Image 1 (tube, rainbow, N blue to C red):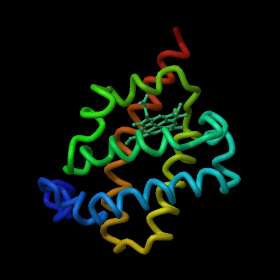
Image 2 (cartoon, rainbow, N blue to C red):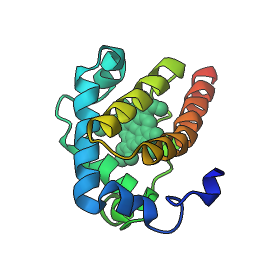
Image 3 (cartoon, helix red, strand yellow):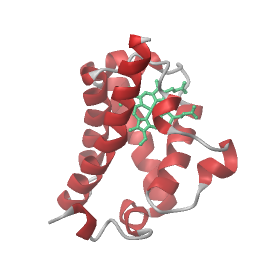
Length: 141
Ligand code: HEM
């Protein structure tokens, strides 16, 4: 199935499928739990502050709008360009894959339907790859 034809891609369908505010909060919290436990994620966990409260809130607020739900990040923190927000970090293929792995594990742990897991992972690879490219460029300069 083409991504644009997916039942999850329209309006707030993704936000609804994740379980709205409650579900998204659980997903973000499980994502950071995975990041704190997985051996493969050690390097990216160390890029974050010890206290993940603000990191969790920011990701939750960002993903809310990204999934077609309330535009919480803009309301609370202002505008953001996701690749630029990561440009100061050392993110290459390993770090990108580690981030995606944490999300994949979190989705599995929370038992989301397989097609939703695949849809979300495919979609998240797009900003993840943009981040990697921006980080690569800022390293060159
Ligand atoms: C490619 C792998 C990625 C790595 C290694 C990574 C790592 C990080 C780190 C270390 C921070 C700073 C945390 C802090 O200082 O509190 C951060 C912030 C953030 N990340 Fe990522 N990230 C990645 C991908 C993504 C993706 C794909 C998204 C969204 C779809 C995302 C959304 C955010 C948001 C919203 C913030 C907060 C930015 C701000 O308000 O300044 N990240 N990320």
